[in-house]
Length: 542
Image (cartoon, rainbow, N blue to C red; front, side, top):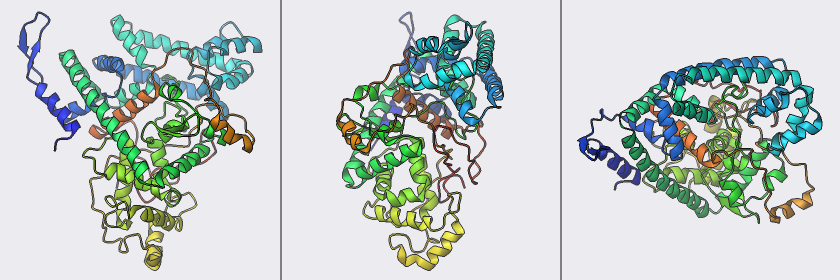
């Protein structure tokens, strides 16, 4: 039976060679070059962006020289910025990096000389509350440093203007707009050959490319809606999965530096649907010690895929993010504590639906299954009755043989299991004879770190008031000082693009991760907790 995605692609492919209507009303036969797998991946990966953003990306891809030159400028400016603040401790470095996320904030703090507290407060009325304390602190105590940062910003802007000055005004506007989506600019440069393919197709026939991308966007939107419904069913059909998702989400949020009050704070659908965030400045990048491309500070609830409604009800709006998914599958203690949640993940990605979204989260799940298949029982991916116990017992087994850095010793695990197999009846008793069929390993996925909160945690509230807070009216958030792209939509679009482009042409921007003890450097606003380079159990490329 044809899947919706296959049908959409079939329709797209049949367009090739069909008559195209010209501006004069005459019909001519389009002369498209042969359509390759890479061509499809390159354009289809952009489907989730709003159409206005897609058009700007298509236009930018027509000018690879600008992409390369701007990327070179970014390398220089981000390096100069890192050098400028390198003499400070990581807490202060991260604070200055965060100040750079807010348009014109630093320049307004330094232009005209050092300002009084009252003058700074007036400026901060135009910015979200989350940055007020930091900006007020450094606006006076580090005026000289901020002046140097501002000079670097102005110099970089001038160099950028020099790069694009010889191009038409509409092209200049496109690249100015895309600087506000730094992940997009990075992907275009990291996968330049795919960007060139998109630009070539768009230059030859922009209407045809837009028709193709619009068709795929419509098909993908329908698939996403059905996938979301499938995930909700995964939670509903497993009596323990929903409760475990709540508990795991709570642990994930506190691991990332949030207070219990933040976790319990209610929201409404308007807040969630229209959430926006300021990315790190493209020119200055994100903190150098972050081991993963990380332009947007994710709020904890976005990673969960749900938020708490005004009365404490669970509002599922999407699938848990790649970061949350990796957090779960990284640690054996999570499999042990939340086995029904693990089972829901498997049902979603190996269940009855005929298609699977090509997402980074799916790659995490797929790689975990393939890396640990020798210990998993027959029917693990298809039979929900065997999964929770298998997750729980496999987590307990791995916890027995964990190294001090959180990794698992495979040799010790093999030996321990050989001597104690009776304690783990839900697992495959003969790991040397794997019972879960081997599948092609998905592209390697790079692992995240413990990230800072996207907002300043609220002050601690007495325990007795926490439940009351759930039933109060949803909190309000100060809106950014200028319109932003819808946070949820842009984040899904960027992850979808990254997943598809890295599958079609793995990026050369990052070296292959080394599976060793992780670095201990973490963002200052979160606990100093490390994350390894690969999921426990040997997930990743072999």
